[in-house]
Amino acid sequence: MKHSAAIIFGLVCLQGIICLHGIAFGAGPSSVSTEFPEIVYLEEMKPFPTEFKGCSGNGSAPIAIEISDSFQKEWVEMVVSVSVQVQSESIRGISRWARPQMASFTLPEHWLEKLSMEPIAHASDQRKVLFSQTVSNGLPLPSHSPLVFRRVLAAAEFDTRERRIRKVFITIRGWREE
Image (cartoon, rainbow, N blue to C red; front, side, top):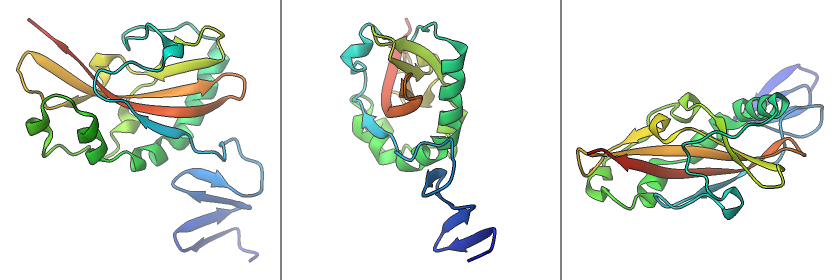
């Protein structure tokens, strides 16, 4: 076809790049990674991988602005695709507490796009940076107690050499106020 754009079976082809849910495949120059990151579900309050040891989700990690900019560009280009794959059932599945309160929980539309992503930790060799939200800035969840606050967090492992997101972690964190 010689048209500049065509829609075939829900795929959009534009200048030799086929896009499905924001992921680029095929020929042609693109700044989007052709590999989709692995999505890892961490059970509620379980720690992030050991390479990010000591990461509570409440801190920040100083990194070069170019690294942060590269991450943000990659994240914006794939956040919708990640969001589509994360289902309400998956969040209920990693919940360890408040199961009865979570029974009717559904993720709001565009929830992941609304979460800010800031560097919170990095591996000791600086090759990987973990981007996420602070616990208080995650997506609120139902709780089993008026003193307990629970949030869904998304975190992304960014490879600083390859300038791409390798994994996306979905977890639940919370705190208790007295």
